[in-house]
Image 1 (cartoon, rainbow, N blue to C red):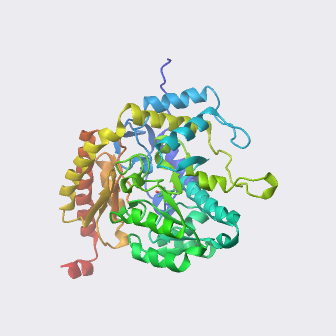
Image 2 (image 1 turned 90 degrees about the horizontal axis):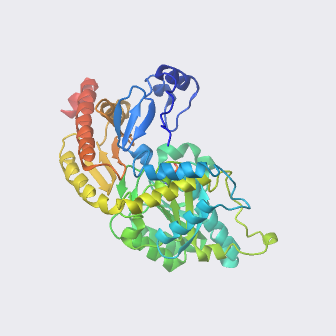
Image 3 (image 1 turned 30 degrees about the vertical axis):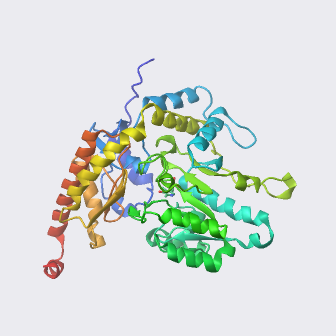
Length: 450
Ligand SMILES: *Cc1c(COP(=O)(O)O)cnc(C)c1O
């Protein structure tokens, strides 16, 4: 094979200039962004990101929670290249292709019992949106009393994506409050409180299409855990009232919490399983909404009968993305990723016990390779979480906080040595950021704290 050394890109000053003039970054206050020189990631190797000056950084949040086996993994690279030599894109509307069909079969094998159908999309938001629309339409088509099931139960602090349906079932005010006039009503319950859910279902079940949850861990809420047994209880309550259960495993799927899917840990089989992020090993935008034959059957009928699921995106089931996802699953098998993950989860637990003892740290929460280090309540103008990020960058790691919760989500493939280094860097960065923030606090606050 020919050497694959890509030509050098434009100088980083040019990139920064173009960026500051023309880009608009997601979840980012552009005013502050434009005051900082952007870090330009040019390439990557394994679990390292490499900037335009050749500096290396540990990818401490898996490139926003999605990388699994590291970057430029030979199996996934090969799968994508081979697909590129066949076709990059062809539509799923009226046609099929080998990678989409094979991937669907493989996903059904891996999914909890009862799951038999795969509907593709290209983001986690779409995957949850599709589950909402499918469950709603399912009950409509059942007719009679069932057609009254038009609303949803969602959890406070939930995050299911940024499209308007996903935002309607979201519960993070900072992200969602602005859009409230555009959203549909849901029954919002306290995370982890199954008595409250029971109450809502007792009173309102016949108007509820589905309950939507992030199993075990609410990620964007700041890595918040549900009590053990909660998901099982939610499943039992849904069964009792014939309400559908949507498990949003966009973040927790593909080994993130230690098992392939988080719902396995409570032996729960959902009616809808939403997948994204790690589905392609973090390579390409692909998401999927998996469901049961019961739901699929509810959509069968004559074309003029209106039971078609009228939803699909231009790039639904994109062949390159499906090939990457097949490469991802192959890597899980070939490398025994989940088996090799277990001792690293134990090591991470040991390392974090030390972090939890730090005076700067209020609480450490986590499950598997999904960790939040909570720095407690601070004046938001200090941007403490962001300061920790900048300190970590100086020390050779990329992380991204949720407010003042420092998130650690390394790729599952990270080595034990790099895991150790990552936690050391983060601990040192927390210490440095807190010290520098302390120095800047208004004297009145210091006096009050003393
Ligand atoms: C990230 C995330 C989503 C949204 O996925 P996108 O690909 O960013 O649209 C949905 N649900 C959960 C639980 C997530 O963590």
